[in-house]
Length: 436
Picture 1: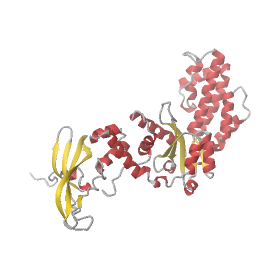
Picture 2: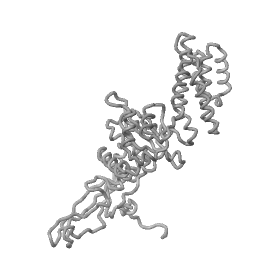
Picture 3: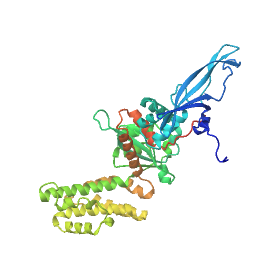
């Protein structure tokens, strides 16, 4: 019985070819691929030179890889008319700019699908090329070219950046060439609570000069708009930011501050282990058994862990470990304090306590005190600027590690930077302007 809810099948609409100015005239579907015969809906039969009427001379067929349906590659065989002008004799071919770029092997819908697969589904180029039934180079070139057009070469992606994050990133693990790049992150959405962080740029090398040159290349008005720079303990980034962004506040990330204190606890434990036992930690050694417990926040300790620490600190040989552990816990509690004013006061008191007056025997605390005293303003700035942290930068680094692993490594840095910007640059594919 007729049901008004359903209509006759229309491949043109189903395959979204009407947006490309194409109309399906036939199909050939096999288990491995679907081939759609198409024609251009716009006649385009007026001479491009004199405006005279054109007569059909012959037809040519252009093949395009289209977005797959059900992971069955879809190929478009577009039949194009060629005209000859009755006035001047000029010969031209029907335009299909709405469907594809000149000389392109992929339709605009195919390129959009490829971008969505790379950016949103985190597929590899090899898997995308398989879905489109094209060569790896063809798919990769199309993705990178479209990515550059809509994102990488778009100057507006640097607009309204007020909070920066900077870190280093290892992009390859081979001995040839520089393995590290400097990663610049836009933390403005995180600080404002409007969205996730996004990758702004990557520059080869990791040094003060690398970051300084990148900042110097930005317009003066842009640099004046940057209010905060979040970073780790590397002094090169700190110096570059101070020279190029004198009005911006530097914030040393809590993760790196706690990690420095945790490293002090570990090194102190290892030193005392060697002094008391004469060897590295082994199974059954009290200090070795407590290595993870020592790095656990005091408010998260179980009863068993509390007992283990009480027995450990009951030994007079472990006094230095206990003192270092106490400073580590005070740093952790300062960051966990819900009242930022109180947390800032607690952090300042810890820095003052270990900056001077620490016994020389506690070499780890002495070194930690010198570091925190030198970067005290950067450490305390965190409490004055809620939401400012280099944590999202570390998270994006993790996403880039996953990208490199899924691609089984990269050999070309330019290609790697382009893929990283597509992966973490805040890009969301959109239709070509001619499509709508």
